[in-house]
Image (cartoon, rainbow, N blue to C red):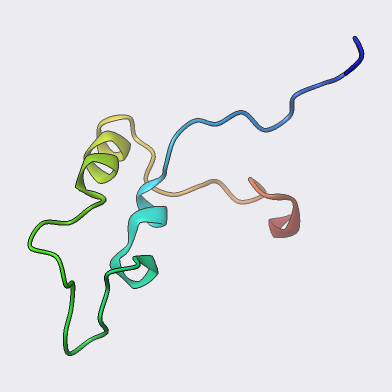
Length: 65
């Protein structure tokens, strides 16, 4: 790594759209729902709402431009 290395994408945390149930490992589908008694992503959801990270802006990722 030289001196001219530039970090473009810094980690800012999860957005609320990243924590939807359909993407979860423990989601059993429409009929079954979540298999856990308590959501495993609840902490990330609360933190995203408090910090205002609901949806990403258009063009946030390279393929979304």
